[in-house]
Image (cartoon, rainbow, N blue to C red):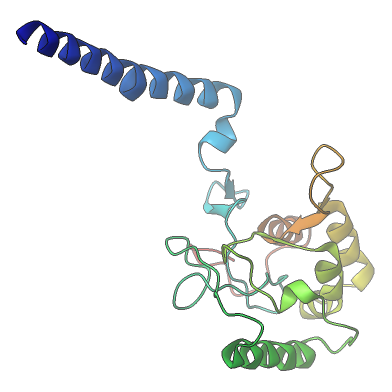
Length: 202
């Protein structure tokens, strides 16, 4: 009995050392060397050393001079990185219809250029934290952003087109635009509109 117990304890200790210490340290070390930015959470700074978010986590933008993300159901007010979740509202939900109708009315008022509203501007992602919108959704917002910044739409369009990310490996997923990176590109090229950016984001 004692011999079996000692063997079991040794196996447990070796397993804990290998899987609980050595392996995690090895993987973390390799990640830090090979993919340092991704290993640290794909954090993004504003060009002045101030971290304003992660390229992997969507955040809310409401000022007209910035491109807006898709709606979020993460947390009470949306875009809460500690409460990633979809709305779980089905197509027969009156609450979902009311929310979507409200978003459509708001977007039509904000975007005087008209045109059909891209679907991702009124639909939340499954996580509520999707950092991307479709290229069509970005292009649809160009006139509003250009007007708010006092720029020709063509200049803003050029930044949008330069920010479009293609399919992974040329075949996976869809073309997309990272909203945070796009807004930072605007600020780098044309300057941040007043008032200054808060510490938590744009």
